[in-house]
Length: 145
Length: 317
Image 1 (spheres, one colour):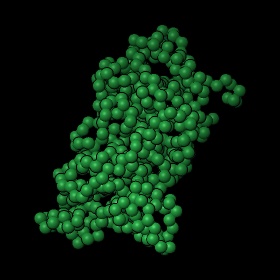
Image 2: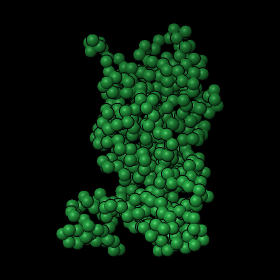
Image 3: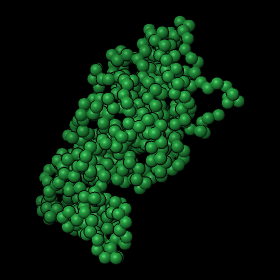
Image 4: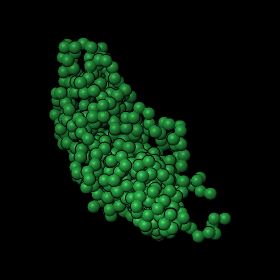
Protein backbone atom coordinates (compact mmCIF):
# COMPACT_ATOMS: atom_id res chain seq x y z
CA UNK A 1 0.00 0.00 0.00
CA UNK A 2 2.55 2.47 1.20
CA UNK A 3 4.84 1.28 -1.59
CA UNK A 4 2.99 3.37 -4.16
CA UNK A 5 3.11 6.51 -2.14
CA UNK A 6 6.03 8.87 -2.48
CA UNK A 7 8.52 8.37 0.31
CA UNK A 8 8.68 11.12 2.91
CA UNK A 9 11.08 11.04 5.84
CA UNK A 10 10.00 10.35 9.37
CA UNK A 11 11.46 12.89 11.73
CA UNK A 12 11.46 12.64 15.50
CA UNK A 13 11.94 15.95 17.25
CA UNK A 14 12.69 15.86 20.95
CA UNK A 15 11.61 19.23 22.31
CA UNK A 16 12.34 20.71 25.69
CA UNK A 17 9.15 21.47 27.59
CA UNK A 18 10.15 25.00 28.51
CA UNK A 19 11.38 26.47 25.25
CA UNK A 20 11.19 24.50 22.07
CA UNK A 21 7.86 22.83 22.77
CA UNK A 22 6.36 26.25 23.34
CA UNK A 23 8.22 27.41 20.24
CA UNK A 24 6.52 24.65 18.25
CA UNK A 25 3.22 25.76 19.73
CA UNK A 26 3.88 29.30 18.63
CA UNK A 27 4.74 28.10 15.14
CA UNK A 28 1.35 26.39 15.11
CA UNK A 29 -0.69 29.27 16.44
CA UNK A 30 1.18 31.62 14.11
CA UNK A 31 0.07 29.36 11.23
CA UNK A 32 3.58 28.82 10.00
CA UNK A 33 4.23 25.87 7.76
CA UNK A 34 6.44 22.99 8.64
CA UNK A 35 6.21 19.41 7.34
CA UNK A 36 3.70 17.11 8.97
CA UNK A 37 6.20 14.26 9.16
CA UNK A 38 7.90 15.87 12.14
CA UNK A 39 6.79 13.96 15.25
CA UNK A 40 7.35 15.97 18.38
CA UNK A 41 8.15 14.27 21.66
CA UNK A 42 8.13 16.49 24.70
CA UNK A 43 10.91 16.04 27.24
CA UNK A 44 11.35 17.98 30.48
CA UNK A 45 14.77 19.29 29.50
CA UNK A 46 17.15 18.70 26.62
CA UNK A 47 19.46 16.83 28.98
CA UNK A 48 16.67 14.31 29.68
CA UNK A 49 17.44 12.81 26.31
CA UNK A 50 18.83 9.36 26.90
CA UNK A 51 21.03 8.19 23.99
CA UNK A 52 18.89 5.07 23.93
CA UNK A 53 15.87 7.21 22.93
CA UNK A 54 17.69 8.32 19.81
CA UNK A 55 18.70 4.80 18.86
CA UNK A 56 15.19 3.54 19.54
CA UNK A 57 13.75 6.25 17.32
CA UNK A 58 16.01 5.08 14.51
CA UNK A 59 15.05 1.49 15.18
CA UNK A 60 11.35 2.21 14.96
CA UNK A 61 11.68 3.92 11.62
CA UNK A 62 12.87 7.48 12.13
CA UNK A 63 15.01 8.82 9.32
CA UNK A 64 16.30 11.74 11.31
CA UNK A 65 16.36 12.79 14.94
CA UNK A 66 16.56 16.37 16.11
CA UNK A 67 16.90 17.68 19.63
CA UNK A 68 15.56 21.14 20.36
CA UNK A 69 16.34 22.83 23.64
CA UNK A 70 16.62 26.22 25.25
CA UNK A 71 19.46 28.45 24.14
CA UNK A 72 22.61 27.94 26.19
CA UNK A 73 22.23 30.15 29.22
CA UNK A 74 18.42 29.95 29.22
CA UNK A 75 17.90 26.47 30.62
CA UNK A 76 14.98 26.25 33.05
CA UNK A 77 17.21 24.12 35.26
CA UNK A 78 20.19 26.44 34.75
CA UNK A 79 22.67 24.03 33.25
CA UNK A 80 20.86 21.10 31.62
CA UNK A 81 21.44 22.16 28.05
CA UNK A 82 25.17 22.62 28.62
CA UNK A 83 25.45 18.97 29.57
CA UNK A 84 23.20 17.98 26.67
CA UNK A 85 25.43 19.95 24.32
CA UNK A 86 28.52 17.98 25.30
CA UNK A 87 26.74 14.64 25.33
CA UNK A 88 25.15 15.09 21.95
CA UNK A 89 28.39 16.35 20.42
CA UNK A 90 30.14 13.16 21.46
CA UNK A 91 27.21 10.85 20.69
CA UNK A 92 26.52 12.24 17.21
CA UNK A 93 30.18 12.04 16.40
CA UNK A 94 30.19 8.40 17.49
CA UNK A 95 27.09 7.66 15.40
CA UNK A 96 28.77 9.27 12.42
CA UNK A 97 31.83 7.11 13.07
CA UNK A 98 29.57 4.07 12.94
CA UNK A 99 28.15 5.16 9.63
CA UNK A 100 24.97 7.05 10.54
CA UNK A 101 25.29 10.16 8.37
CA UNK A 102 25.88 13.41 10.21
CA UNK A 103 22.83 15.00 8.59
CA UNK A 104 20.41 12.62 10.31
CA UNK A 105 21.13 13.99 13.74
CA UNK A 106 20.96 17.60 14.78
CA UNK A 107 20.71 19.84 17.81
CA UNK A 108 19.03 23.24 17.59
CA UNK A 109 18.38 25.82 20.26
CA UNK A 110 14.88 27.24 19.89
CA UNK A 111 13.29 29.54 22.44
CA UNK A 112 9.58 29.86 23.22
CA UNK A 113 9.48 33.09 21.21
CA UNK A 114 11.07 31.60 18.12
CA UNK A 115 8.14 30.00 16.33
CA UNK A 116 9.54 31.12 13.01
CA UNK A 117 12.92 29.61 13.78
CA UNK A 118 11.25 26.34 14.76
CA UNK A 119 9.41 26.14 11.45
CA UNK A 120 12.50 27.12 9.47
CA UNK A 121 14.65 24.59 11.33
CA UNK A 122 12.20 21.78 10.67
CA UNK A 123 11.86 22.69 7.01
CA UNK A 124 15.60 22.67 6.63
CA UNK A 125 16.08 19.44 8.57
CA UNK A 126 13.41 17.63 6.58
CA UNK A 127 15.08 18.83 3.40
CA UNK A 128 18.48 17.52 4.54
CA UNK A 129 17.08 14.15 5.57
CA UNK A 130 15.06 13.84 2.36
CA UNK A 131 18.27 14.28 0.41
CA UNK A 132 19.94 11.56 2.48
CA UNK A 133 17.08 9.21 1.76
CA UNK A 134 15.56 6.48 3.83
CA UNK A 135 17.45 5.36 6.90
CA UNK A 136 18.15 1.70 6.42
CA UNK A 137 21.13 1.48 8.72
CA UNK A 138 19.64 1.46 12.16
CA UNK A 139 16.12 0.62 11.15
CA UNK A 140 14.68 -2.63 12.40
CA UNK A 141 12.78 -4.48 9.68
CA UNK A 142 10.33 -5.84 12.21
CA UNK A 143 9.20 -2.30 12.94
CA UNK A 144 8.33 -1.60 9.30
CA UNK A 145 4.77 -2.06 8.27
CA UNK B 1 60.51 -11.64 44.25
CA UNK B 2 56.93 -10.40 44.44
CA UNK B 3 55.84 -13.33 46.63
CA UNK B 4 58.75 -12.65 49.00
CA UNK B 5 57.65 -9.06 49.39
CA UNK B 6 54.06 -10.15 50.00
CA UNK B 7 55.23 -12.55 52.69
CA UNK B 8 57.07 -9.69 54.35
CA UNK B 9 53.83 -7.74 54.39
CA UNK B 10 52.11 -10.76 55.95
CA UNK B 11 54.49 -10.64 58.90
CA UNK B 12 53.21 -7.18 59.79
CA UNK B 13 49.57 -8.07 59.39
CA UNK B 14 48.51 -11.67 58.99
CA UNK B 15 44.93 -10.78 58.11
CA UNK B 16 45.84 -9.49 54.70
CA UNK B 17 44.30 -10.81 51.53
CA UNK B 18 46.04 -10.59 48.20
CA UNK B 19 44.65 -10.07 44.74
CA UNK B 20 46.83 -11.32 41.95
CA UNK B 21 46.98 -13.89 39.19
CA UNK B 22 47.09 -17.66 39.26
CA UNK B 23 48.18 -20.09 36.56
CA UNK B 24 45.18 -21.30 34.56
CA UNK B 25 44.50 -24.36 32.49
CA UNK B 26 46.39 -23.53 29.33
CA UNK B 27 50.00 -22.30 29.14
CA UNK B 28 48.72 -18.75 28.48
CA UNK B 29 45.94 -18.57 31.05
CA UNK B 30 46.42 -16.36 34.07
CA UNK B 31 43.28 -16.06 36.14
CA UNK B 32 42.54 -13.24 38.60
CA UNK B 33 42.40 -14.72 42.05
CA UNK B 34 42.25 -13.78 45.71
CA UNK B 35 44.94 -15.35 47.88
CA UNK B 36 45.26 -15.79 51.61
CA UNK B 37 48.39 -16.51 53.64
CA UNK B 38 48.05 -20.25 52.90
CA UNK B 39 47.56 -20.03 49.15
CA UNK B 40 49.98 -17.21 48.49
CA UNK B 41 52.50 -19.64 46.98
CA UNK B 42 50.27 -20.06 43.91
CA UNK B 43 50.47 -16.41 42.99
CA UNK B 44 52.22 -15.86 39.73
CA UNK B 45 53.22 -12.77 37.81
CA UNK B 46 54.70 -13.03 34.35
CA UNK B 47 54.19 -11.86 30.81
CA UNK B 48 50.81 -13.54 30.46
CA UNK B 49 49.12 -11.54 33.23
CA UNK B 50 47.32 -9.25 30.82
CA UNK B 51 44.05 -9.00 32.71
CA UNK B 52 43.20 -5.86 34.60
CA UNK B 53 42.63 -6.60 38.28
CA UNK B 54 40.91 -3.31 39.10
CA UNK B 55 37.49 -4.55 38.07
CA UNK B 56 38.05 -7.85 39.88
CA UNK B 57 38.46 -5.92 43.13
CA UNK B 58 34.79 -4.93 43.02
CA UNK B 59 33.70 -8.51 43.48
CA UNK B 60 36.31 -9.24 46.15
CA UNK B 61 35.45 -6.66 48.77
CA UNK B 62 35.95 -7.75 52.38
CA UNK B 63 36.69 -6.11 55.69
CA UNK B 64 40.29 -7.18 55.39
CA UNK B 65 42.96 -4.93 54.04
CA UNK B 66 43.70 -6.03 50.49
CA UNK B 67 47.04 -6.01 48.77
CA UNK B 68 46.61 -5.72 45.05
CA UNK B 69 49.09 -6.04 42.22
CA UNK B 70 48.50 -3.47 39.51
CA UNK B 71 50.31 -2.95 36.26
CA UNK B 72 50.80 0.64 35.13
CA UNK B 73 47.72 0.53 32.86
CA UNK B 74 45.58 -1.06 35.59
CA UNK B 75 46.38 1.81 37.91
CA UNK B 76 44.37 4.21 35.74
CA UNK B 77 41.30 2.01 36.11
CA UNK B 78 41.88 1.73 39.85
CA UNK B 79 42.00 5.53 40.15
CA UNK B 80 38.86 5.83 38.07
CA UNK B 81 36.99 3.37 40.30
CA UNK B 82 38.17 5.29 43.38
CA UNK B 83 36.98 8.53 41.78
CA UNK B 84 33.57 6.97 41.24
CA UNK B 85 33.61 5.81 44.87
CA UNK B 86 33.31 2.18 43.87
CA UNK B 87 36.56 1.41 45.66
CA UNK B 88 37.90 2.93 48.84
CA UNK B 89 41.53 3.86 48.29
CA UNK B 90 42.38 3.35 51.98
CA UNK B 91 41.29 -0.28 51.93
CA UNK B 92 44.03 -1.23 49.47
CA UNK B 93 47.75 -1.48 49.55
CA UNK B 94 48.69 -1.11 45.90
CA UNK B 95 51.83 -2.75 44.66
CA UNK B 96 52.77 -1.46 41.25
CA UNK B 97 54.30 -4.27 39.27
CA UNK B 98 56.64 -3.62 36.39
CA UNK B 99 55.42 -4.40 32.89
CA UNK B 100 57.36 -5.01 29.72
CA UNK B 101 54.27 -5.62 27.65
CA UNK B 102 52.01 -8.64 27.98
CA UNK B 103 51.76 -11.54 25.61
CA UNK B 104 48.70 -12.47 23.63
CA UNK B 105 48.08 -16.23 23.61
CA UNK B 106 45.84 -15.83 20.57
CA UNK B 107 48.72 -14.31 18.61
CA UNK B 108 50.96 -17.24 19.51
CA UNK B 109 48.30 -19.63 18.25
CA UNK B 110 47.95 -17.62 15.08
CA UNK B 111 51.63 -18.08 14.26
CA UNK B 112 50.63 -21.66 13.49
CA UNK B 113 52.57 -23.33 16.26
CA UNK B 114 50.77 -26.54 17.16
CA UNK B 115 50.73 -28.73 20.24
CA UNK B 116 51.97 -26.13 22.72
CA UNK B 117 52.92 -27.62 26.07
CA UNK B 118 54.55 -24.69 27.81
CA UNK B 119 55.99 -21.28 27.10
CA UNK B 120 59.13 -19.95 28.69
CA UNK B 121 60.49 -16.46 28.50
CA UNK B 122 64.16 -15.78 27.99
CA UNK B 123 64.85 -12.11 27.54
CA UNK B 124 63.41 -11.02 24.24
CA UNK B 125 62.55 -14.49 22.97
CA UNK B 126 59.84 -16.95 23.88
CA UNK B 127 60.83 -20.59 24.02
CA UNK B 128 57.79 -22.65 23.16
CA UNK B 129 57.85 -26.26 24.14
CA UNK B 130 55.59 -28.24 21.81
CA UNK B 131 54.80 -31.87 21.15
CA UNK B 132 57.09 -31.63 18.15
CA UNK B 133 60.07 -29.99 19.80
CA UNK B 134 61.07 -26.49 20.86
CA UNK B 135 60.41 -23.35 18.84
CA UNK B 136 61.49 -19.78 19.46
CA UNK B 137 59.67 -16.61 18.53
CA UNK B 138 60.53 -12.97 19.32
CA UNK B 139 58.52 -11.66 22.22
CA UNK B 140 57.66 -8.37 20.56
CA UNK B 141 55.77 -10.13 17.75
CA UNK B 142 53.12 -11.50 20.05
CA UNK B 143 52.43 -8.57 22.38
CA UNK B 144 48.80 -7.71 23.13
CA UNK B 145 47.35 -4.99 20.94
CA UNK B 146 46.72 -2.89 24.00
CA UNK B 147 50.42 -2.97 24.83
CA UNK B 148 51.29 -1.63 21.40
CA UNK B 149 49.20 1.44 22.27
CA UNK B 150 50.55 1.72 25.81
CA UNK B 151 49.90 4.93 27.72
CA UNK B 152 53.31 4.75 29.36
CA UNK B 153 54.70 2.81 32.26
CA UNK B 154 54.14 5.30 35.03
CA UNK B 155 52.35 3.89 38.08
CA UNK B 156 49.52 6.27 38.87
CA UNK B 157 48.60 5.09 42.35
CA UNK B 158 51.23 2.68 43.67
CA UNK B 159 52.18 2.53 47.35
CA UNK B 160 55.32 0.74 46.27
CA UNK B 161 56.73 -0.41 42.96
CA UNK B 162 58.33 -3.78 42.27
CA UNK B 163 60.07 -4.69 39.07
CA UNK B 164 61.21 -2.89 35.98
CA UNK B 165 59.08 -1.58 33.13
CA UNK B 166 59.84 -1.04 29.52
CA UNK B 167 57.92 1.06 27.05
CA UNK B 168 56.13 -0.97 24.40
CA UNK B 169 54.20 1.71 22.56
CA UNK B 170 54.65 1.68 18.81
CA UNK B 171 53.20 4.22 16.40
CA UNK B 172 50.09 6.34 16.71
CA UNK B 173 47.26 4.75 18.64
CA UNK B 174 44.68 6.75 16.71
CA UNK B 175 45.87 5.48 13.37
CA UNK B 176 43.01 3.03 12.80
CA UNK B 177 40.47 5.55 14.09
CA UNK B 178 41.76 8.11 11.59
CA UNK B 179 41.58 5.53 8.82
CA UNK B 180 37.94 4.81 9.64
CA UNK B 181 37.14 8.52 9.84
CA UNK B 182 38.48 8.98 6.34
CA UNK B 183 35.99 6.46 4.92
CA UNK B 184 32.52 7.35 3.67
CA UNK B 185 29.59 6.75 6.07
CA UNK B 186 28.53 3.70 4.05
CA UNK B 187 31.99 2.15 4.24
CA UNK B 188 32.15 2.82 7.94
CA UNK B 189 28.76 1.27 8.45
CA UNK B 190 29.79 -1.78 6.45
CA UNK B 191 32.97 -2.08 8.51
CA UNK B 192 31.09 -2.00 11.80
CA UNK B 193 28.33 -4.25 10.54
CA UNK B 194 30.90 -6.85 9.66
CA UNK B 195 32.64 -6.58 12.99
CA UNK B 196 29.58 -6.33 15.20
CA UNK B 197 27.72 -9.13 13.47
CA UNK B 198 30.32 -11.46 14.95
CA UNK B 199 29.10 -10.57 18.43
CA UNK B 200 27.78 -13.55 20.38
CA UNK B 201 26.62 -11.39 23.28
CA UNK B 202 28.74 -13.22 25.81
CA UNK B 203 28.98 -9.88 27.67
CA UNK B 204 32.69 -10.42 28.28
CA UNK B 205 33.46 -6.86 27.18
CA UNK B 206 31.00 -5.55 29.71
CA UNK B 207 32.13 -7.81 32.51
CA UNK B 208 35.82 -7.15 32.04
CA UNK B 209 35.53 -3.41 31.57
CA UNK B 210 36.58 -1.55 34.71
CA UNK B 211 34.51 1.48 33.71
CA UNK B 212 31.37 -0.64 33.16
CA UNK B 213 30.71 -1.09 36.84
CA UNK B 214 26.99 -0.43 37.31
CA UNK B 215 25.44 -2.76 39.85
CA UNK B 216 22.45 -3.24 37.59
CA UNK B 217 23.14 -2.89 33.91
CA UNK B 218 20.48 -1.46 31.60
CA UNK B 219 20.89 -4.55 29.43
CA UNK B 220 19.92 -6.80 32.34
CA UNK B 221 16.64 -5.01 32.80
CA UNK B 222 13.88 -7.00 31.11
CA UNK B 223 11.71 -3.88 31.01
CA UNK B 224 14.16 -1.98 28.85
CA UNK B 225 13.03 -3.96 25.82
CA UNK B 226 16.46 -5.19 24.81
CA UNK B 227 16.73 -8.75 23.59
CA UNK B 228 20.05 -9.43 25.30
CA UNK B 229 20.88 -12.39 23.16
CA UNK B 230 23.10 -13.07 20.20
CA UNK B 231 22.01 -12.26 16.69
CA UNK B 232 18.56 -11.10 17.76
CA UNK B 233 18.80 -8.59 14.93
CA UNK B 234 21.25 -6.12 13.44
CA UNK B 235 19.86 -3.26 15.41
CA UNK B 236 20.37 -4.94 18.76
CA UNK B 237 24.00 -5.61 17.98
CA UNK B 238 24.59 -1.98 17.12
CA UNK B 239 22.55 -0.76 20.07
CA UNK B 240 24.50 -2.82 22.58
CA UNK B 241 27.87 -1.68 21.37
CA UNK B 242 26.93 1.96 20.88
CA UNK B 243 25.46 2.15 24.37
CA UNK B 244 28.36 0.19 25.88
CA UNK B 245 30.91 2.52 24.34
CA UNK B 246 28.96 5.68 25.02
CA UNK B 247 28.21 4.74 28.60
CA UNK B 248 31.92 4.73 29.42
CA UNK B 249 32.56 7.95 27.47
CA UNK B 250 34.91 10.15 29.44
CA UNK B 251 35.52 7.36 31.96
CA UNK B 252 37.23 4.87 29.69
CA UNK B 253 40.93 4.77 30.48
CA UNK B 254 41.71 2.96 27.23
CA UNK B 255 42.92 -0.11 29.07
CA UNK B 256 41.96 -2.28 26.11
CA UNK B 257 40.28 -5.02 28.13
CA UNK B 258 37.16 -5.03 25.93
CA UNK B 259 39.09 -6.08 22.86
CA UNK B 260 41.42 -8.38 24.76
CA UNK B 261 38.59 -10.47 26.21
CA UNK B 262 36.41 -10.54 23.10
CA UNK B 263 36.28 -14.18 21.98
CA UNK B 264 35.28 -13.05 18.51
CA UNK B 265 38.13 -10.57 18.12
CA UNK B 266 35.93 -7.52 17.57
CA UNK B 267 38.09 -4.37 17.84
CA UNK B 268 35.80 -2.78 20.42
CA UNK B 269 38.50 -0.44 21.67
CA UNK B 270 38.17 1.47 18.39
CA UNK B 271 34.79 2.77 19.55
CA UNK B 272 36.15 3.91 22.90
CA UNK B 273 39.23 5.36 21.32
CA UNK B 274 37.13 7.41 18.94
CA UNK B 275 35.30 8.92 21.91
CA UNK B 276 38.58 9.59 23.71
CA UNK B 277 39.94 11.30 20.64
CA UNK B 278 36.81 13.42 20.26
CA UNK B 279 36.74 14.39 23.91
CA UNK B 280 40.41 15.38 23.78
CA UNK B 281 39.83 17.38 20.67
CA UNK B 282 36.65 19.16 21.75
CA UNK B 283 37.24 19.68 25.45
CA UNK B 284 40.98 19.58 25.92
CA UNK B 285 43.29 16.68 26.67
CA UNK B 286 41.94 14.40 29.33
CA UNK B 287 43.12 11.05 30.59
CA UNK B 288 40.58 9.19 32.70
CA UNK B 289 42.12 7.77 35.86
CA UNK B 290 45.14 10.04 35.83
CA UNK B 291 44.39 10.98 39.42
CA UNK B 292 41.69 10.29 41.98
CA UNK B 293 38.93 12.90 42.12
CA UNK B 294 39.06 14.19 38.56
CA UNK B 295 35.86 15.52 37.04
CA UNK B 296 35.31 13.93 33.69
CA UNK B 297 34.48 15.99 30.61
CA UNK B 298 30.92 14.73 30.17
CA UNK B 299 29.90 15.72 33.69
CA UNK B 300 31.36 19.14 33.16
CA UNK B 301 30.83 22.01 30.74
CA UNK B 302 32.00 25.45 29.80
CA UNK B 303 29.92 28.26 28.37
CA UNK B 304 32.03 28.29 25.23
CA UNK B 305 31.70 24.62 24.23
CA UNK B 306 31.46 23.92 20.53
CA UNK B 307 28.06 23.27 19.00
CA UNK B 308 27.09 19.67 18.17
CA UNK B 309 26.23 20.59 14.59
CA UNK B 310 29.62 22.08 13.73
CA UNK B 311 30.90 20.57 10.52
CA UNK B 312 33.42 17.86 11.19
CA UNK B 313 34.58 15.13 8.93
CA UNK B 314 33.90 12.02 10.95
CA UNK B 315 34.49 13.89 14.16
CA UNK B 316 37.93 15.13 13.16
CA UNK B 317 38.49 18.87 12.87
